[in-house]
Length: 254
Image 1 (spheres, rainbow, N blue to C red):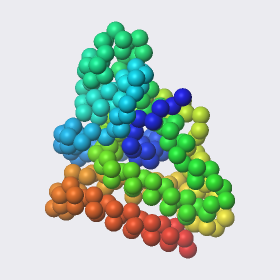
Image 2: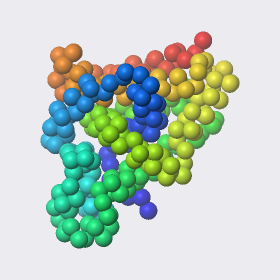
Image 3: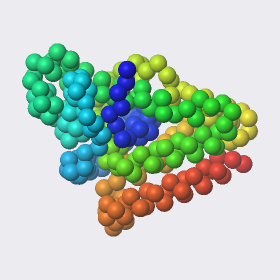
């Protein structure tokens, strides 16, 4: 049974879809994630003030550990987290934590796997073959942007973590029963074949992902460049959702 621990959903999906291609691009070019990594520390300080999880009343020890782990991982990252910190946050002993999870990597994997499984259950429109592809794209944009404005720091956190730990990303992807990226890409390919949209399906997919992801991953830089506050950024992103919904209606058609 997968237990819902999160207020964020579609945001995490983007990293399963696009991050392997970002890693390949970085490997084959001089692309640097320096700007994003420099802003990460700032985002973490913000994150520690506004934790991004729904802590419900639970008595199940494993669930308590996962809730505590997500809080500590968000604050310190996988590399900077110690199991003792998670045990303290959960209010249990180190021995009890080890009974459920032998190391922090396995715990990180468990937290992420639960989340990605939940994502699949929240995206029925991707499996709706009768829905026009433009409408499915608009559903994705709406779900992504609505959840991203609730926790705008999470994109940069996930980008940094999967950049530093690509093997974890591969393990998560291989453990999923439902091929979410493949389903979405297939839907786009069918849309192209039917003449609903035009263009290379992979490029369309990456464009859609990037349009949603980039402002949040580069949030600190965007706020600085635009001279806006946290509240101003959220207002801008809400307006961006409406812009993107109109944009996809014509961007990939003749």
